[in-house]
Length: 255
Image (tube, rainbow, N blue to C red; front, side, top):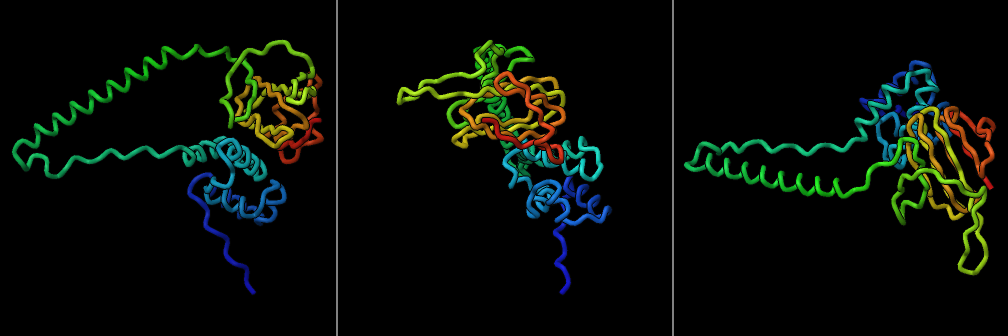
């Protein structure tokens, strides 16, 4: 019984990964084992179907790891993936074929264009007022205090001195221990951190040269892409990521 043909690859980053994998005589199973992904997820990457990966942060991580596995430069592939991830712009309607055929149509078209420009001007004025009301941005090295994305957005803030272990009073009067994770990014890296309840308290792509901080109730489950470019400490004690890293992705739990 012959094997079923592999699905067609995409025309972006996925097509390049597909072609290079076939050139190196690697099977989908080989890539699946190395990247710790399912075969269906590998197939999705090669089709430029990023819906199974939960957002650009993870797409960047898996495309980067796949490229490194094949010995390819990941940067052009990341740019190609971003083109697939970017929202499509709305098409501009073409002028009606009837313009100029009926008396008065040119005048109505001119009035409609003027009305559109007035509307755009009003929108720009409102946006300008909102921008002036917004608080000024923090310094480049500001750290982010991670909170659950369900309850409130993250806000950049300058890191302040704090104890190694925070104590938060619970409703029952007991003290809840809070662990503090600090990260210094020497290279671009995506990070996801979940707290004791399984809620995501931190999840984003972090540029090289940035510093971040997240706190939550341990144990904290952490996944770090491009782990070689990240320095991590937990409650002011440095954590060695090397023993927890496979194919440039570190997975660990901090108590």
